[in-house]
Amino acid sequence: MRHEGLATDPLPLPDGGSLAITMDLRHHEIVLRSSTGWELRSDLRSAGTGTELADRMFDAVSELGLEGPYDRSRFENDDPRTYDPAAAEVYFEAFVAVNTIFERRRLSLGDRVSPIQVWPHGFDLAFDWFGSRIEEEGGERVSPEVNLGFYPGGIPYFYSNPWPFDSSLVGSPLPHGAQWHLEGWQGTMLPYAAVRAGDAATRLLDYARAVFDLATPGLGV
Image (tube, rainbow, N blue to C red; front, side):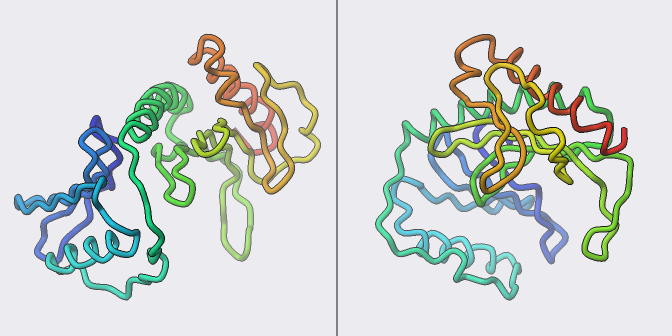
């Protein structure tokens, strides 16, 4: 995340340069910018359908040599769409505030943590802490983990989910109105409204520490 919006890590280009893609939620643009100075801006307020926007992005990166077997069907959507600048700004301001608190928590956990990322399937912001124990999962060696995330859609909430999930933890007390969630996915959730009702940073950090303390004895510290 950058000060103006959501950004990818630099993508390597065939000529040795790199490309960054930013969804600028302050100026309401998608910006493609290469290390050589090439730049393309697309106004989100007049971006057209999802299919049209994706076609422009694919055509642009192909000019820079990024060709590949892209599955364009994943981006096809010809439904009319409306971009709401005011909603985008509220969304981004909330993410900036949450990211600041997440970074405090992340830095307190040592070096076994992932970057804080925005996941495109739900536009949720999250990071993972990885335990020291190694397990076999689907023929691969994996490390158990605990995540901490923020889901902004519908009725927004924070989540923290140990994996593998230990059902014996269900019912353990959680702070500030947080609750165990078992339908659709297994873990814990803290309503965004509960955080806004008081000292947001304290409530969110209390919640993160509580789930972490419950989960980590079984995951390896």
